[in-house]
Length: 449
Image: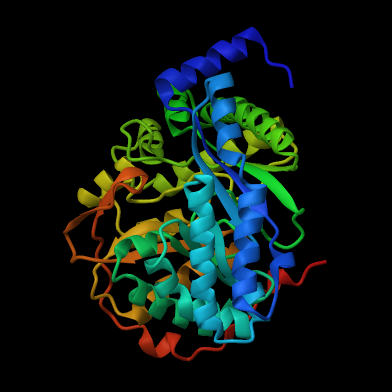
């Protein structure tokens, strides 16, 4: 991959002034060979496999960061969904799940990574013994570990929405919220991608190679600068400018990803183009929309502006690389995006507007703080609404919702998780609807191929 002098100088400016970084390099590891009916054997095999395969991940990432001067913010690991390994455990599978989570946590700390994903289950069509045990163990597993992240896929366009799983997730989130940080490490998905490098939703999915490097790039500050410089152009021209910039950002990500894969002796997987904001001023997706001409993110027109942004970023990335995957688009995590949090505080954004915007962004209701007394059934109903958007539109949607505090409070999580006001939730009851359970059938558009 050759870069011109102009591209190199432009990249240096993006890094120095506009917060361009590689948000994460995530090493996917297949753990299927660790299966056993003895949890102690499984735990040891998992620890040994992770520390063996990922032992050089952090040093090599640090070396590439120094070589190119490109910040690599997070180094992470994603593993095979642990529910598949719990199916064969002879003892109490729920207890076994917590023990395995602790083994994952220990291995993550041994190799020096930030987070490890894959404490996961795919239950969009129903439960197995292992997935039931994993779901029941999530609150305890997240409470007793620091780096472990969990995800549960409860819906897909091909299968519909497993409302039994949705109801269960509402209760799990409420139970896990005794430590609000637990809920920041737990995401409920529709159409979960098998190669997502971002936490908390990363896992090493079916069809992936033995081990693989997936890269998540991020450049909200870079895109914002481009939009600000194009103050008087029409929206079609603005989309073209964003697309060209996304092309350049993606080239940087693929350079890092391919070199990481080569150094570790693993496959190169995908580039996830998602614009992932941080609480740093100027590194905000909300501020990009405002630079387009909205007085405040959440104003009428915000969904259209976000659709333009997401589409242009995807098109630019697809031009730059044949290996675009994961989520790819624009994230709108409320607490992690200072512009989003400010918009909530000013009343420009509420839960309904976030839901509308999630129909065109990369994920869904992300890092949304709701009152601690929100009923589990209401949380389940919020998840069901978001899953419906994903299923009908054949896109990924996810929910990271955190019940804590009371409406109007400001909750600070710290670091990259930022902080957010507590949003209001409709008080009308959804319990009778969600308790019906069963499976909402797949939409008619699933009958293809």
